[in-house]
Image (cartoon, rainbow, N blue to C red; front, side, top):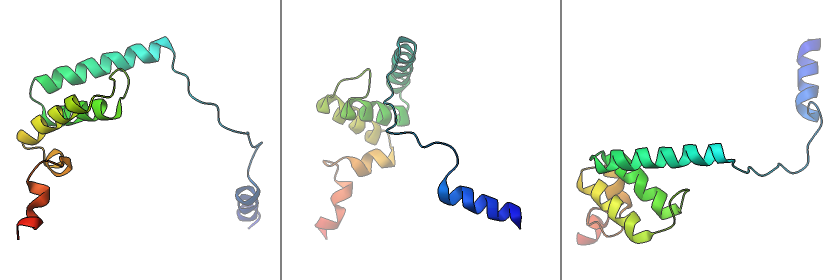
Length: 106
């Protein structure tokens, strides 16, 4: 019973010191090099025809994730290619695809 009470007290008041605002993450060169390598690998996989990788590369361009810069045209192109290859999520998120608008044709 004493253990349960001690756990409840710790949960209510917290254990240890409370830190102020969290420190922002600042990537170092090693992290940036790894990000570039992963993005290159993902893009190579997308070019090889992997529909999931194509959708992910489109998302990288859409959101401007490092090392890619925001480019909505390239993002749309990769998403369209992914949808053309049968990735259902890409078909559903493509605003120009006829599938999301099927209910308008009724």
